[in-house]
Amino acid sequence: MSNDTLIEVKGLKKYFKVGKNQLLKAVDDVSFSIKRGETLGMVGESGCGKTTVGRTILGLYDVDGGSVLFDGVEVHAQKGKEYKALTKQMQMIFQDPYASLNPRKTVSAIVGEGLDIHKMYKTKAERMEKIYNLLELVGLNREHANRFPHEFSGGQRQRIGIARALAVEPKFIVCDEAISALDVSIQAQIINLLMKLQSQYEFTYLFIAHDLTMVQHISDSTAVMYLGTLVETGRTEDIFSKPLHPYTKGLLAAAPEADPDYEMSKPSPILTGEVPSPINPKPGCRFFGRCNVAIEICSKERPALVPVDEHHLVACHVVNTLKSEV
Amino acid sequence: MNKTTNILLPNAFEFVEDPQLDSDSITRPSVTFWKDVWRRLFKNKVAMLGLFIITIITILAICVPLFSEYTYKGQDLVNANALPSSTHIFGTDNLGRDMWVRVWVGARVSLAVGVFGSVIPSLIGIVIGGISGYFGGKLDMLIMRFIDVAMCVPSMIYIILIMLFIGSGPISIIIAFALTGWMGSARSVRGMILQLKEMEYVLASKALGASSASLIFNHLIPNTLGIVVVSMTMGIPSAIFYEAYLSFIGLGVAPPTPSWGQLSNAGIAVFRVYPSQLMIPSALISLTMLSFNLFGDGLRDALDPKLRS
Image (tube, rainbow over all chains, first blue to last red; front, side, top):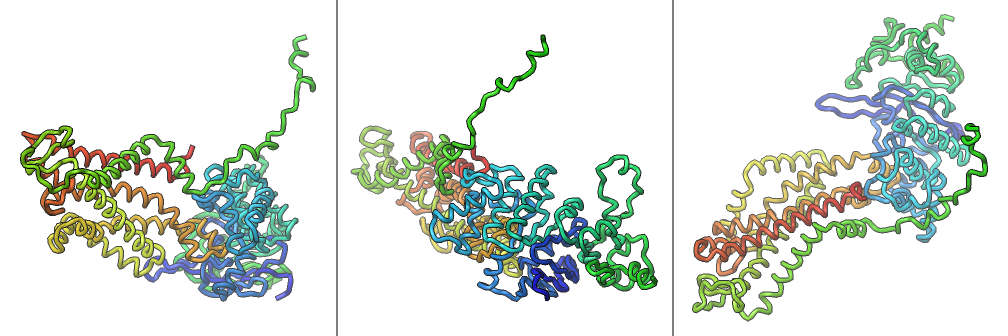
């Protein structure tokens, strides 16, 4: 593993039991890595396992296979104090700003929780000073410290959530659809804040979203997920300019355009049908049922993620056969 | 000409002072959660009235038997069935016992049974429900199925059986309540814990490296406490009523020890002739139940910061 890689995910598997003999394969053999100071955007439809990937990386869920290396340390092998030390370096910004703040705690208690857990101050005055600085960093005022979460708007709450994550001075932050619950103007504010903080503190982000334009804007690399598996990864510009996997193509085509004339003239969407259930999936390519270029092998064998370029990987039999024929 | 009047010239504006400058001075002082609850409760007039009546009744129950010249079993047969007067404030019963003292000795029994008969089962319920919800799995299944089965039978039947088995008296009543009353609160606490432990703020706390103990004491318990405290307060009047009912049918405290239910039972025999002997204890039962209900309502509002104005 090269030294500039911060997060290395290898063959990650996370299954949930749902009833008798039924296994929900939320994440099934996912591998990727994130370089220091970079942002990996992760996109995919609802329920494809993006959030589970994020939570599993942080060790909030146990793994059912594979491993996560953070700076060379295996996250799920750490217990007790060692895991606690790891939590200081990896943080998460949650999806729902209404559910992610304890309604009974004041803002200073919420933001200060990490400081308390990791004993990051000597005096009470120092603790309050740190909390005030964090609030100002995310664009809130000192006077907000004694208020309760319900006194804030969604955007402000999300800023409190960001301040909480930043309190422990982490290196790596998982943004789990951090902006999807906010309205568009606030989304831009939060994105700009995240990018400003990244340039200031060299954070590494895993940016989980389903808004493609946001991902294009913020990420250095992009990973496309479908039903618990990665179908395509690569540099963001490559993914958006020359998508190879039929699912990526469909996803990009489905994103609405700002120009209404162009939007009207667009060909009908490539993606049809519903995402099949991840419970006891069939063998073969997960995308088989909805794919318009599928060939015989697709129903039998699961395609592996293979490089087509130096940084561009794709998991598709059709793309691979085309490439080998050339 | 008209147009010029509509143009706003730069000198038509003046600077306002930066509102941010003195924003610190309007900040609410940092208060703890419980101080804030007390402040909100204090503002609620109806709840404070309830608390006031409860306090008065408690003080009278403690002081009257201590300082009165009569005792609850001392007889004054010449003055039997006396009406309220200056010598006997509430009159006397058919055995010439002073009702004023008997009522407040009875209040001791009724209040003690009410408070302990509600708090002890709730505490047992919190512990069992908390364990069941937090750890889940087979243990949870076992506890919940047990409660399902045990709750099928009306609790009054258990209480009567227990009373028959261990004998009557205030302590037996509390034990009987403790053995039957924990199931409801265990169930509701379990439900709340199950819901809370999946909340994102609990995950956030886990991601910050918080221990299980810190999760339970910082996030789970404070968020269930409000509802539990309210249900405890609301449980007191029903425990008082159960005690009164048990004593009324002759299963509660044994004579000559008075309780409100027992006094009512005695009063009903002479109701047509001396209505005050029934009216006084039953009015006190009603007043106490009402006060606890009003106070419980106010407490629920005070414990919910979302309702804060």
